[in-house]
Image (cartoon, rainbow, N blue to C red; front, side, top):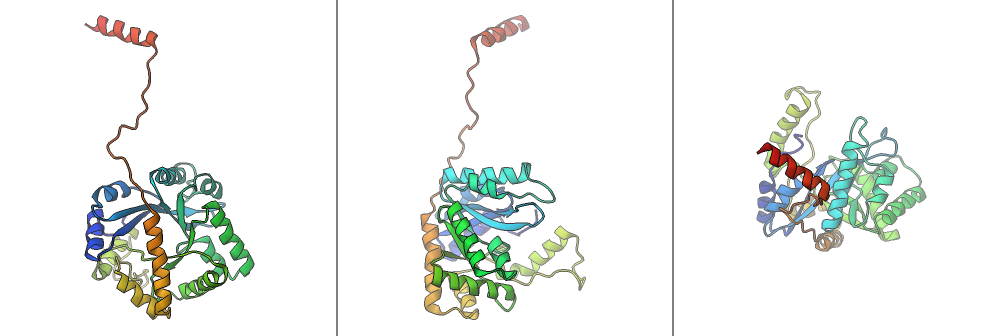
Length: 287
Protein backbone atom coordinates (compact mmCIF):
# COMPACT_ATOMS: atom_id res chain seq x y z
CA UNK A 1 0.00 0.00 0.00
CA UNK A 2 1.04 3.62 -0.62
CA UNK A 3 3.93 2.62 -2.90
CA UNK A 4 3.00 5.03 -5.68
CA UNK A 5 0.74 7.95 -6.60
CA UNK A 6 -1.08 7.04 -9.78
CA UNK A 7 -4.09 5.27 -11.20
CA UNK A 8 -4.09 2.90 -14.18
CA UNK A 9 -5.75 5.66 -16.22
CA UNK A 10 -2.94 8.09 -15.29
CA UNK A 11 -0.29 5.60 -16.43
CA UNK A 12 -1.97 4.91 -19.76
CA UNK A 13 -2.56 8.57 -20.52
CA UNK A 14 1.07 9.40 -19.78
CA UNK A 15 2.24 6.55 -22.03
CA UNK A 16 0.06 7.90 -24.84
CA UNK A 17 1.41 11.41 -24.31
CA UNK A 18 4.93 9.93 -24.59
CA UNK A 19 3.99 8.15 -27.87
CA UNK A 20 4.73 4.80 -26.24
CA UNK A 21 3.06 1.69 -27.63
CA UNK A 22 3.43 -0.44 -24.47
CA UNK A 23 3.86 -0.02 -20.73
CA UNK A 24 4.18 -2.45 -17.82
CA UNK A 25 2.69 -2.69 -14.34
CA UNK A 26 4.55 -4.76 -11.72
CA UNK A 27 2.93 -4.45 -8.29
CA UNK A 28 5.12 -5.49 -5.36
CA UNK A 29 4.27 -9.06 -4.23
CA UNK A 30 0.80 -8.71 -5.71
CA UNK A 31 -1.28 -8.18 -8.82
CA UNK A 32 -4.07 -5.98 -7.49
CA UNK A 33 -3.76 -3.36 -10.21
CA UNK A 34 -3.35 -5.67 -13.18
CA UNK A 35 -6.94 -6.24 -14.28
CA UNK A 36 -8.01 -2.58 -14.02
CA UNK A 37 -4.82 -1.63 -15.84
CA UNK A 38 -5.52 -4.25 -18.54
CA UNK A 39 -9.13 -3.09 -19.01
CA UNK A 40 -8.13 0.52 -19.57
CA UNK A 41 -5.20 0.03 -21.96
CA UNK A 42 -6.91 0.98 -25.20
CA UNK A 43 -4.36 1.52 -27.95
CA UNK A 44 -1.46 0.67 -25.62
CA UNK A 45 -0.08 -2.84 -25.08
CA UNK A 46 -0.40 -3.81 -21.39
CA UNK A 47 2.56 -5.74 -20.00
CA UNK A 48 1.49 -7.54 -16.84
CA UNK A 49 3.77 -8.78 -14.12
CA UNK A 50 4.96 -8.55 -10.55
CA UNK A 51 8.02 -7.42 -8.62
CA UNK A 52 8.15 -10.28 -6.15
CA UNK A 53 10.34 -11.13 -3.18
CA UNK A 54 12.48 -14.23 -3.53
CA UNK A 55 14.46 -16.11 -0.90
CA UNK A 56 16.15 -19.44 -0.26
CA UNK A 57 15.55 -19.35 3.50
CA UNK A 58 13.43 -16.15 4.08
CA UNK A 59 16.33 -14.54 5.99
CA UNK A 60 17.94 -13.01 2.90
CA UNK A 61 15.25 -11.37 0.77
CA UNK A 62 15.88 -10.50 -2.89
CA UNK A 63 13.69 -9.22 -5.73
CA UNK A 64 12.89 -10.64 -9.13
CA UNK A 65 10.58 -9.13 -11.76
CA UNK A 66 8.31 -11.53 -13.66
CA UNK A 67 6.39 -10.63 -16.84
CA UNK A 68 3.72 -12.76 -18.56
CA UNK A 69 4.14 -13.54 -22.26
CA UNK A 70 0.50 -14.63 -22.67
CA UNK A 71 -2.62 -15.50 -20.69
CA UNK A 72 -1.58 -19.04 -19.79
CA UNK A 73 1.65 -17.73 -18.34
CA UNK A 74 -0.12 -14.82 -16.68
CA UNK A 75 -1.86 -17.54 -14.63
CA UNK A 76 1.57 -18.86 -13.60
CA UNK A 77 2.43 -15.42 -12.22
CA UNK A 78 -0.89 -15.29 -10.32
CA UNK A 79 -0.06 -18.71 -8.86
CA UNK A 80 3.36 -17.48 -7.68
CA UNK A 81 1.80 -14.39 -6.10
CA UNK A 82 -0.70 -16.65 -4.31
CA UNK A 83 2.08 -18.92 -3.02
CA UNK A 84 4.03 -15.92 -1.71
CA UNK A 85 1.02 -14.54 0.16
CA UNK A 86 -0.37 -17.79 1.57
CA UNK A 87 2.38 -20.38 1.97
CA UNK A 88 5.66 -18.56 2.54
CA UNK A 89 4.86 -15.65 4.82
CA UNK A 90 7.44 -15.10 7.54
CA UNK A 91 8.18 -11.41 7.98
CA UNK A 92 7.13 -10.71 4.38
CA UNK A 93 5.66 -12.73 1.47
CA UNK A 94 8.20 -14.44 -0.79
CA UNK A 95 8.68 -17.31 -3.23
CA UNK A 96 11.33 -20.04 -3.19
CA UNK A 97 13.53 -21.43 -5.95
CA UNK A 98 11.35 -24.55 -6.25
CA UNK A 99 8.32 -22.27 -6.79
CA UNK A 100 10.14 -20.47 -9.59
CA UNK A 101 11.14 -23.72 -11.24
CA UNK A 102 7.63 -25.15 -11.06
CA UNK A 103 5.82 -22.10 -12.52
CA UNK A 104 8.50 -20.52 -14.73
CA UNK A 105 7.08 -21.63 -18.07
CA UNK A 106 6.40 -18.69 -20.38
CA UNK A 107 7.57 -16.08 -17.90
CA UNK A 108 10.11 -13.39 -18.74
CA UNK A 109 12.34 -12.66 -15.72
CA UNK A 110 14.37 -9.50 -15.05
CA UNK A 111 17.24 -9.33 -12.57
CA UNK A 112 15.98 -6.05 -11.01
CA UNK A 113 17.50 -3.73 -8.40
CA UNK A 114 17.77 -6.01 -5.41
CA UNK A 115 18.23 -9.28 -7.32
CA UNK A 116 20.52 -12.18 -6.56
CA UNK A 117 22.91 -11.37 -9.42
CA UNK A 118 23.26 -7.77 -8.23
CA UNK A 119 23.94 -8.91 -4.67
CA UNK A 120 26.67 -11.28 -5.87
CA UNK A 121 28.35 -8.46 -7.80
CA UNK A 122 28.20 -6.03 -4.86
CA UNK A 123 29.62 -8.77 -2.60
CA UNK A 124 32.53 -9.17 -5.07
CA UNK A 125 31.88 -12.87 -5.61
CA UNK A 126 34.04 -14.62 -8.26
CA UNK A 127 33.02 -13.95 -11.86
CA UNK A 128 32.64 -17.68 -12.57
CA UNK A 129 30.13 -18.07 -9.71
CA UNK A 130 28.07 -15.11 -10.99
CA UNK A 131 28.05 -16.43 -14.56
CA UNK A 132 26.96 -19.85 -13.31
CA UNK A 133 24.12 -18.24 -11.39
CA UNK A 134 23.01 -16.29 -14.48
CA UNK A 135 23.03 -19.54 -16.48
CA UNK A 136 20.91 -21.18 -13.77
CA UNK A 137 18.27 -18.46 -14.15
CA UNK A 138 18.47 -18.68 -17.95
CA UNK A 139 17.73 -22.41 -17.78
CA UNK A 140 14.85 -21.93 -15.33
CA UNK A 141 13.20 -19.33 -17.58
CA UNK A 142 14.00 -21.04 -20.89
CA UNK A 143 16.59 -18.36 -21.81
CA UNK A 144 14.15 -15.53 -21.10
CA UNK A 145 16.19 -14.08 -18.22
CA UNK A 146 17.53 -10.53 -18.68
CA UNK A 147 20.13 -8.44 -16.89
CA UNK A 148 18.43 -5.18 -16.08
CA UNK A 149 19.82 -1.70 -16.75
CA UNK A 150 17.81 0.78 -14.69
CA UNK A 151 17.63 4.42 -15.72
CA UNK A 152 19.07 5.93 -12.54
CA UNK A 153 21.85 8.51 -12.54
CA UNK A 154 25.12 6.88 -11.42
CA UNK A 155 25.94 10.00 -9.34
CA UNK A 156 22.86 9.28 -7.23
CA UNK A 157 23.17 5.46 -7.29
CA UNK A 158 26.92 4.68 -7.52
CA UNK A 159 26.31 0.98 -6.79
CA UNK A 160 24.46 0.74 -10.12
CA UNK A 161 27.61 1.92 -11.92
CA UNK A 162 29.53 -1.04 -10.55
CA UNK A 163 26.73 -3.49 -11.34
CA UNK A 164 26.06 -2.26 -14.86
CA UNK A 165 29.75 -2.11 -15.74
CA UNK A 166 29.90 -5.85 -15.01
CA UNK A 167 26.66 -6.37 -16.97
CA UNK A 168 28.24 -4.73 -20.02
CA UNK A 169 31.14 -7.16 -19.79
CA UNK A 170 28.76 -10.12 -19.63
CA UNK A 171 26.81 -8.84 -22.64
CA UNK A 172 29.90 -8.31 -24.78
CA UNK A 173 31.97 -11.30 -23.68
CA UNK A 174 29.34 -13.92 -22.84
CA UNK A 175 26.35 -12.93 -24.98
CA UNK A 176 24.04 -12.43 -22.00
CA UNK A 177 20.64 -10.83 -22.59
CA UNK A 178 19.67 -7.42 -21.27
CA UNK A 179 16.78 -5.00 -20.89
CA UNK A 180 16.56 -1.29 -20.07
CA UNK A 181 13.80 -0.32 -17.67
CA UNK A 182 12.46 2.88 -16.16
CA UNK A 183 10.94 2.30 -12.73
CA UNK A 184 8.02 4.63 -12.03
CA UNK A 185 6.34 5.42 -8.72
CA UNK A 186 4.66 8.63 -9.93
CA UNK A 187 3.68 10.16 -13.27
CA UNK A 188 5.44 13.50 -13.79
CA UNK A 189 8.94 14.52 -12.74
CA UNK A 190 7.38 17.29 -10.65
CA UNK A 191 5.49 14.71 -8.53
CA UNK A 192 8.62 13.70 -6.60
CA UNK A 193 7.85 15.87 -3.56
CA UNK A 194 4.27 14.56 -3.41
CA UNK A 195 5.63 11.02 -3.48
CA UNK A 196 8.05 11.96 -0.68
CA UNK A 197 5.08 13.09 1.44
CA UNK A 198 3.25 9.84 0.64
CA UNK A 199 6.18 7.79 1.97
CA UNK A 200 6.10 9.84 5.19
CA UNK A 201 2.44 8.90 5.63
CA UNK A 202 3.14 5.25 4.79
CA UNK A 203 6.11 4.90 7.16
CA UNK A 204 4.99 7.31 9.89
CA UNK A 205 7.96 9.63 9.28
CA UNK A 206 7.91 13.32 10.14
CA UNK A 207 8.37 15.23 6.89
CA UNK A 208 10.78 17.81 8.35
CA UNK A 209 12.86 15.25 10.25
CA UNK A 210 16.43 15.68 8.85
CA UNK A 211 17.24 12.05 9.76
CA UNK A 212 14.45 10.42 7.75
CA UNK A 213 15.12 8.73 4.36
CA UNK A 214 14.50 11.09 1.44
CA UNK A 215 13.36 10.39 -2.11
CA UNK A 216 16.45 11.05 -4.24
CA UNK A 217 16.05 8.96 -7.41
CA UNK A 218 13.74 10.08 -10.21
CA UNK A 219 10.94 7.52 -10.61
CA UNK A 220 8.54 9.11 -13.09
CA UNK A 221 7.30 7.71 -16.43
CA UNK A 222 10.16 8.63 -18.76
CA UNK A 223 10.20 9.22 -22.49
CA UNK A 224 12.80 7.47 -24.61
CA UNK A 225 14.68 10.78 -24.79
CA UNK A 226 14.73 10.97 -20.97
CA UNK A 227 16.21 7.46 -20.88
CA UNK A 228 18.88 8.36 -23.44
CA UNK A 229 19.88 11.48 -21.48
CA UNK A 230 20.49 9.41 -18.35
CA UNK A 231 22.41 6.76 -20.31
CA UNK A 232 24.58 9.52 -21.82
CA UNK A 233 25.15 10.98 -18.34
CA UNK A 234 26.23 7.52 -17.23
CA UNK A 235 28.83 7.37 -19.99
CA UNK A 236 27.09 4.88 -22.30
CA UNK A 237 27.81 5.79 -25.92
CA UNK A 238 24.98 6.68 -28.29
CA UNK A 239 25.38 3.71 -30.65
CA UNK A 240 25.30 1.29 -27.70
CA UNK A 241 22.25 3.09 -26.26
CA UNK A 242 20.33 2.26 -29.43
CA UNK A 243 21.54 -1.32 -29.18
CA UNK A 244 20.30 -1.61 -25.59
CA UNK A 245 16.95 0.09 -26.22
CA UNK A 246 16.24 -2.00 -29.34
CA UNK A 247 16.29 -5.15 -27.23
CA UNK A 248 13.74 -3.68 -24.83
CA UNK A 249 11.41 -3.09 -27.79
CA UNK A 250 12.02 -6.66 -28.94
CA UNK A 251 10.93 -8.04 -25.56
CA UNK A 252 7.81 -5.85 -25.61
CA UNK A 253 6.94 -7.07 -29.12
CA UNK A 254 7.20 -10.72 -27.98
CA UNK A 255 4.47 -10.24 -25.35
CA UNK A 256 0.84 -10.89 -26.25
CA UNK A 257 -1.22 -11.38 -23.09
CA UNK A 258 -4.97 -11.33 -23.76
CA UNK A 259 -7.13 -11.96 -20.71
CA UNK A 260 -10.71 -13.21 -21.23
CA UNK A 261 -12.77 -10.89 -19.04
CA UNK A 262 -16.24 -11.40 -17.57
CA UNK A 263 -16.16 -15.20 -17.97
CA UNK A 264 -17.67 -17.44 -15.29
CA UNK A 265 -14.71 -19.33 -13.87
CA UNK A 266 -16.57 -21.52 -11.38
CA UNK A 267 -16.60 -25.18 -12.48
CA UNK A 268 -19.94 -26.74 -13.39
CA UNK A 269 -20.90 -29.41 -10.87
CA UNK A 270 -23.32 -32.15 -11.89
CA UNK A 271 -25.58 -32.92 -8.92
CA UNK A 272 -26.17 -36.69 -8.51
CA UNK A 273 -29.78 -37.69 -9.16
CA UNK A 274 -30.44 -38.82 -5.57
CA UNK A 275 -29.62 -35.33 -4.27
CA UNK A 276 -31.75 -33.73 -6.95
CA UNK A 277 -34.74 -35.79 -5.76
CA UNK A 278 -33.98 -34.74 -2.18
CA UNK A 279 -34.13 -31.04 -3.14
CA UNK A 280 -37.52 -31.63 -4.80
CA UNK A 281 -38.89 -33.19 -1.60
CA UNK A 282 -37.60 -30.32 0.54
CA UNK A 283 -39.08 -27.79 -1.86
CA UNK A 284 -42.44 -29.63 -1.88
CA UNK A 285 -42.58 -29.76 1.94
CA UNK A 286 -41.75 -26.07 2.14
CA UNK A 287 -44.76 -25.25 0.01
